[in-house]
Image (cartoon, rainbow, N blue to C red):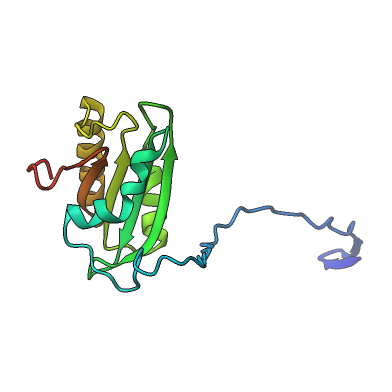
Length: 167
């Protein structure tokens, strides 16, 4: 390869092509189709307006032997658009970080979230850690514009942070 300079043609080595690697992020959704004989479990377009309604739907968690932390992503009319299993923990704790919870809520364009976790002991009374993480999640949600409507602890009965005035 040659180029013309002030002093005539000059031989220039061919430039070696460079490779640049970049990471890209793509939102990937998975649609699950559940075929079951239960016809009233999660009806399409159901609006979730009370903690008892959420408990009725997710009371099966009381039989789990590990703590499960679930975030229900809701649209503007409080209908479920996504169900995110945020964390599966041990007998008495599960690790939840605001970054992980709201990452998927942003991807699903959620207007609000309902937080659910179970206590395998059957006692739905929230621990100090439950109160602390709920406050942190509510603050993070307020900051990014996704409301935390309630945090419901499921045991033999349920404990609603909204009904008790914690949210």
